Amino acid sequence: FGILFLLFVEGLNLSPEKLRELGAFFRLGAFQLLLSAALIALTWRDRPGRARESGATVATSLAGAWASVSRSRMLMSIGLVSALYETALYVFVFIWTPALERRAAPTMSHGLVFATFMLWKMVGTQLHVHLEATATEALKVTFLLSASSIVVPLVTSSYEACLFAFALFEMSLGIYWPAIATLRSDEISDEMRASTMAVFRMLLNVFVVTSLLLVGYMSEAVSFMLTGVLLLVCLAITV
Image 1: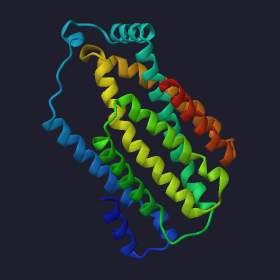
Image 2 (image 1 turned 60 degrees about the vertical axis):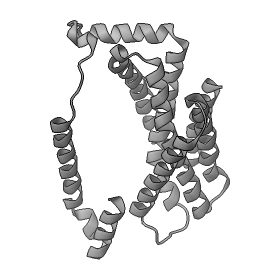
Image 3 (image 1 turned 135 degrees about the vertical axis):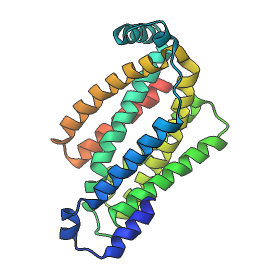
Image 4 (image 1 turned 90 degrees about the vertical axis):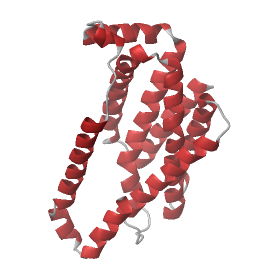
């Protein structure tokens, strides 16, 4: 769909100034999101957990989840890895565009680059299916590959090399999602899944907000180094 919409926009042959003035494409995206939300509401059936059936409050559920996480080294590791890796992902989202723009001026638009990233992410997901490895081993591969690819902009100014490195980062992201989902499924009980994920999400939000506030004052090199450090910490936790 991304490639189709890109071809549609390019077919309009609009000037960059005119494209910046148009909001129709964003409204079209909002329509797709609303349509997806309606389909989910009509076709998905959520199963109430035992906490809801027993009348437990949100605060009680979150307190119980935090107690479980603080007592379990594995759950704490999963929470930290999720928060740190996804923080690195958010930082990458903010810096990949200026990083490519600072290099050669290619004919490849950012829309096509983003669509290419999504294809590489799909490749990573399919690769995970064929990997004969545990979820923890797959995560180690993910963090090592991500950290290796994210340092490429620090050692070269080649547009093509950076684009390929960023595509590898997206491929590792495709491995990450099913691997971390498998690990969460194995370690988090169904009764505590929603509240435990809420605890993980609060930790992620703290890391993301802090990192993005800092990124605005950092150079490109420091931003990539910060991302690399976060990924190496994730690797160290899983070792």
